[in-house]
Image (cartoon, rainbow, N blue to C red; front, side, top):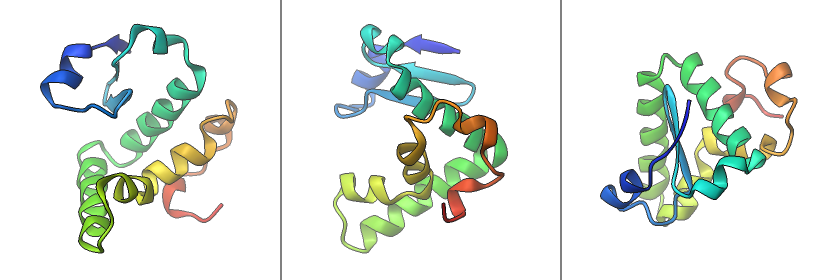
Length: 111
């Protein structure tokens, strides 16, 4: 389910974030972005990842990877881009058939 939730992004001070997948919802900052198929596909990939990792494990792994890359000296943006879940989503966000062929735990498989 997709919701426009500008207040959520303001409340959590997520200035650079356009959308976020918090199972079972996809929250979008700007109502015009609801029709951005690449953005929606990116978030749907995260949705599948969250289901595979029983949601809570996904969040633990996601945050752990972010902290790991921050401790390695990366700034927040670079640490975010190195998270395996984000790498997979960015790599395949323009492939609208990707979820039909995606392998289980694909974020940790080399493609």
